[in-house]
Length: 155
Image 1 (cartoon, rainbow, N blue to C red):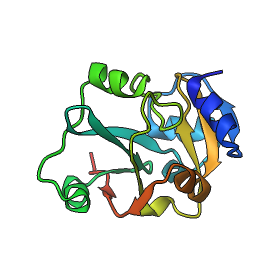
Image 2: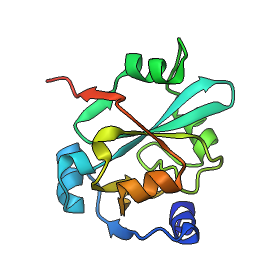
Image 3: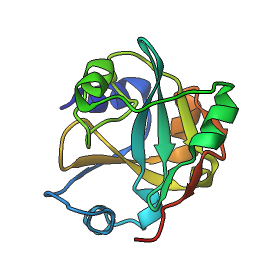
Image 4: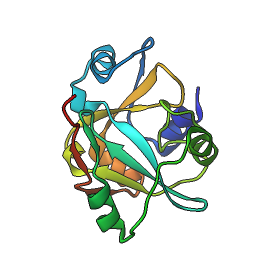
């Protein structure tokens, strides 16, 4: 069990645990989880200020739109914490971060494209994810729905 799985159980949120081996790409993660790419959700920790963070739930194939997020939050500056600060803020290493079981219940903003979908989130350790109903999960986290992402740039 991880803090994330404990928190999901305590919240009474219906979820499916998915264990898979190492993945090196979004496409590999989707295949390992048996879902479409947009259903592999990246939980991004964003720093607003000293000891002030939030989680942004980003569908696979998309990236945070910093102008949209700043406008939503009414701030002129945001940053991404380094790996150490992200772990200090959440209790999780990058690649395993989830709002569930975080050291602090930081605010959650979910990209509106996740509405009505079953999504998969990291669950606190590498190779471990959970599938949850996005609407139920975001409501349970007192999250905010907003258009805060753009398509990933072509490489």
